[in-house]
Length: 486
Image: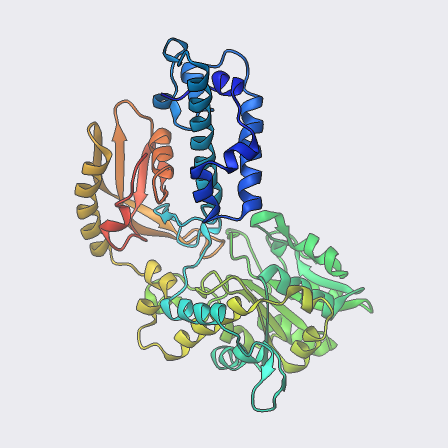
């Protein structure tokens, strides 16, 4: 039996002694010596600080084998050598468990049964297999990221994806940075540093992570000039505000909320006409950014990037990992002279994406151009357009599987529910879905949720209406819920 922690503390072995044991020698065959030594010292330091009198259930919290491994004082070995040997075994158990935990990836796979398709906290869009293949190739090999092979000279990483973006959006040029917040920041800095940017009060948005248009504008060096009111803004409001210090007209798509009722807003067409009349560039931040007309798939309409470019916007910014369904990226498309001005901005180097993001984005964009069935090839669109019948079939199979895995006392039923798109895309849009409702007479929904989060791999569901739900919109086979419970 293992010694209780206070007994371990009385017989703590030295670092050198532990390093000579066969068990640690085996660890040294798999792990860096400095890492193992550091973990040994951490374990010994923890044991030195165990409070006096810790036994039983409390001991389980510090004994690596838990309650079953901890023994009460009446069962401790009486022989001093046995004490030392038992203490050493307990320390080694604790060391191996600590190394096992420290060696596990912190960025762990989870099962998204939350009902939020583009869940920011779970990594947003899933990549298509073609994009993953390109990422793998780029990760394991040298690639021509900024190397022009025909000329044998330095190239530009934007050139890898620019042709595809131009073809998909109708823009004259395109550039990519590491996310859409960066795209907005660099565009404002390049086009209006030290000058005023006119924007409607109704478009001063805040998105997740406390990103606010006024604050990002302040960081860009541009000066915010609000026009209109929260619910109503007219082109005359912009016209009246234009002055010698005006540098840019900005339109922000309210992609994560809607203002309804007594409202008025200025169209991009009107803003472009006004900008041309006064020689001012016009920028639109689309946020989510759709490359295709979502109404063709039975979804609510979102502005299509190509349409906004055709209306004459000098630059349009949008995300790569929302409705586009690719990696995290901020994409800027528009007039060549404007995009080149942004490319020359010194901030660009601080915001440029790495080769893995470029590879993933190229793989995703090529699907848009070449796939005969985009809704099947692109995971985001596949989730958005999932038939109810498919979810029901998976749900019926998953009920049987989970009944066996969860054990007695759990009740599982297939119910109708609603999913949401998430990440500020298609606000207010609820998609009909199927879910597994799981309950237990002795466990609250929150307790059940914790049990699923502790599974391997963890399963992220949601509690709604006093019931724990596993949304099946993103579960394409019952086996995805064949997880191991602690």
